Image 1 (tube, rainbow, N blue to C red):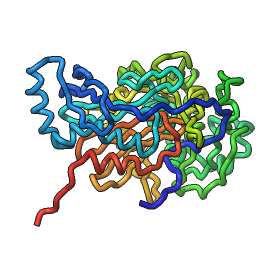
Image 2: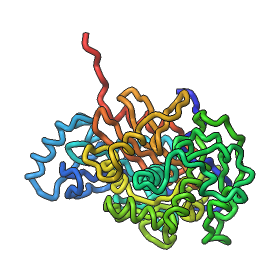
Image 3: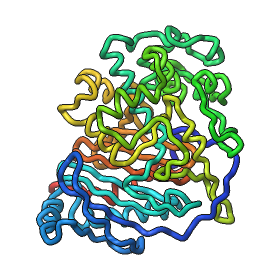
Image 4: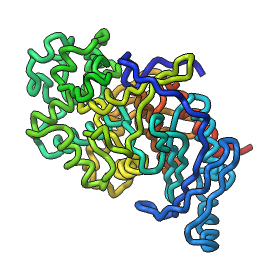
Length: 422
């Protein structure tokens, strides 16, 4: 597979180093769950084992779990052997990309399974668990887009509204094409606006509480070249502006808007757009290891992110709730028209299509909708496969340079091969 340009992500930025040694390779724990679709009762976690062992699942209901496991064998996204190999898949991914810790969740009509591995915090030795909260970088664009579309549904915004109706031109006077952009072009990355990135200078201990405003990010960030309006070109500037527009129209901060409109209604109780760095459940984000095997903790930059391009820290289970709300026929998150607009192809390049906050990629296993994110030592993959009615989520606290083919690796191991009829 050829090397792809960065996409669906924030660019890596340099920041002040906090050095932490990498521990030995972690073990993997499988946490199977019952077939109840919304809040299934968990199986007991099995003891930690070698990453090369095949994990087994045990139930907190004793021998009665055999019936549940038998049902899971029929789950169409994998055979029983593949289900048992979920931990092995995660072990291979973390080994290939040298990730300190990660969680892999697979959810479908028959239930949900989760595997965890490694450490959430290298300094304290805290392990990754199902409750570990990861910054998910650009995956948060899905929530920003959903909130915008709710406001459009309510008639407070229009997709054809010019951006300058809500943005002071003095705050973005160096942003090329801003005078031509409307909300629809921001949502679909077809505005042509240059990608202006926040500087990582303040991700060091001397500046632990820095929080950028949209105006600061647009005024002080490093901007890449603009692109022709109407052509798909991924730019974080689009979603920084969308977050700012939400604040202008709603009269409150983005964190409060997302909590009220998205997180609370979906019972995403472990998700926030603001974090307290002392929260022991937080995964720390680590950048590239040095030749001495040490990594830089870049978490502060991610945790200070309160802009619309990367606003959310969450758990894999909470993201699963979000995807159920987006892809269930009875979704109450958005009107049918707005849900359809999210999933419609508005922009396209050779690798992907973009709707409103959702990427669509053609894979060997059918189309997948979702997003990936890379920022400040965190990487996230969150995808739904409509043909299989299955959601796959992987969150990790390793280097944001993790290659885009991480999902190709997971797909090939997770889904059974399709044999053409003769």
